[in-house]
Image (cartoon, rainbow, N blue to C red):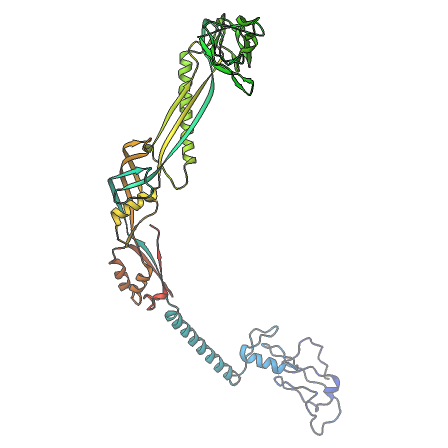
Length: 487
């Protein structure tokens, strides 16, 4: 008794599971070969076959292959397999088209490989010829030139460089500065000093001058008495359009007695008590704009001689440094100066006398700086005329010079100086890229190296070829790039 085989998820290779109606259409005992792929809906019934149903024989499955379902895409899959094969789900290896099916694809692949190789060859030939390039990096030859005792003259009267006379135009610059600083007094003495002040005595009484003798008394509103230090003549007033314009003379008044009571800060107005009761009392008066100071009596702090010396050194040094900085920042653009072509003079130093009473004191200093400035480019032009002359194959390296200026004599008032110039300057060979490109065009590696090594203006070089395997310079100079290194 034939039993129906159980339902399976997998069916034999190339055979689709038949329905009951399809089994009835096969002859009794007939079975479908395992390798055939048949679409039952399209296969005609065998002649004489009845409608009697017969059990379908069991389907034998291959162990190494899984069944393939037919679908409308089968022809498209077949074409794809022809080139790449097809690895189906659960398969251990791809299935490929037959040798007859693979022949056109193999021919196409071979032709494609040959065409690709030809294109690569053509590309390599093109870049090796038309695309060939050479980059030369050149290090020019550099030499140090010694400058020894070149006599030059700076002159403020010259407006332009005189190469024959070696005369350099110069400019005279003047800077002035005043500095005031206060210091602490450290001395101590028993003193008896009288207050003093500089005053102006006015005459608004008449146009006639008035003589005042030494020790003439002057009295403040607070009854503090001062005396005239020396005799003086007060000029007469000027009468302008009927009006009197007072005239004055400046003198020194000294307190009548020592002590601090005569010290007075601020402006002080004084009258002459000897004129009291006469019209001259209102017509003559004195004014101390800064008051009176210096009066002392007893043991107290005073300015010592060492205090004054220390203060003067500090003030003058600071003033000197200030003027040096000012010269550096205020020098006009394009001009330079050297130490031997300048001077700083202290024109005034005011300090109190030794034993002057007081806790503090001030020192005031004034100074003047004078400079002969010039353009260093004029020095370079002079050296070009002396060293290079008409030689265009060399030039000076910018900023390479180191000069020392030995001043033989200088006159700041006249604005002239004689100087001996010493030092060094670097000279570099001038490389012309077009000339080098034409020289090495078409040369191979050894010839190219030899052509550059024999040049006196080249101290070193490197060559970079493109493409990298090329070892000769392009025949066209336009394919050669020359880079000149900065010295």
